[in-house]
Length: 424
Ligand code: PSV
Ligand code: MN
Image 1 (cartoon, rainbow, N blue to C red):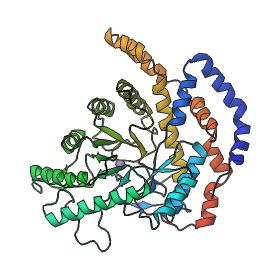
Image 2 (image 1 turned 180 degrees about the vertical axis):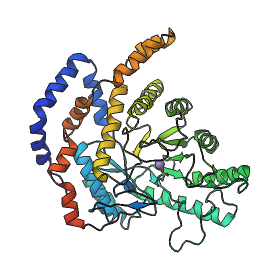
Image 3 (image 1 turned 180 degrees about the horizontal axis):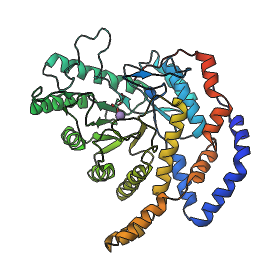
Image 4 (image 1 turned 135 degrees about the horizontal axis):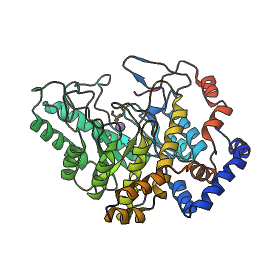
């Protein structure tokens, strides 16, 4: 299914009056509205190929039907999102879930939908059919050299796939670790992992980046070999200038101060990118901004402060991606909400009067600091975000259009009710 521009325009017409009223009000209150809109238009958030189907838990899965059955259909789904919001212009593939049969045809299809290929992701956390060695006791950390080599070779193969598609980064997330005290020698596991990563790093093309994602626990429950930002930082620091830490918002211990982590990684030149999602308890992979929108805003405030201090380009100098999926929403509606949540936090952070905040900080005026910060957070910027979509040819209200056009019903008609997308 494809959504035509004229259908989006028709729907926009029914919303334009109330939208213009809200936008005019914001323009009368805020000087920087036009500058914020330009930045929002340039900002794109990559969609993970594995979030297009219904996620599940180990207790069950309740698919809604019409899920993409192939890489081609995953690209079509991201194309639908991008047509609606004009902010999801990239897809991130997970190998081997998404191995292209014909790279040129896949690239052409992506271009037709206005999409680029974001980071490619390797998978050494599952055993694949016909795989020689098991990753039960880890991959890059494994005590067995042949297993480490198999995992290294897989990552190098993923880089090759990415080169064919025009991707420019590899994200490595390892489930490596241990479930019980004494199971693993921490120092040996670290050393093996580092040496394995060095071999993968050596296979990176000149213009590529390697993102090393950390996670506190799960599936290992006693130790994780890249368990937090400090560990990831220590590896990427040793690997070299093309290696960076990737922050997945759900991968911290409860109440971690993620905005501070982000600020320091950025200051050290080692922040590579994000996997956005939200959570209450663990790696819940819920819609970005659904549970802790203030945290998302604070993260973006630190990002803007740190990126501007280094003269970085907001749109291109970090990897922006969603990593969410779950059981009870339509996955495409959920992704539309996640993108909206991220754009809202970005717009609010752009609104923040950082000069005023700095003066208040330097005067230790804690009350004023909070007033300034929360003044930006509590501004309803939805009309600004919608205007950015409108100007780039998207929908004022993407979910309303998705529902009015019966996109899910159409996808079920095309693909059937029993489809299962590959991936988690
Ligand atoms: C692991 O929990 C993770 O966040 C990594 O990014 C994986 O590649 C992804 O989820 C998919 O399982
Ligand atoms: Mn992730």
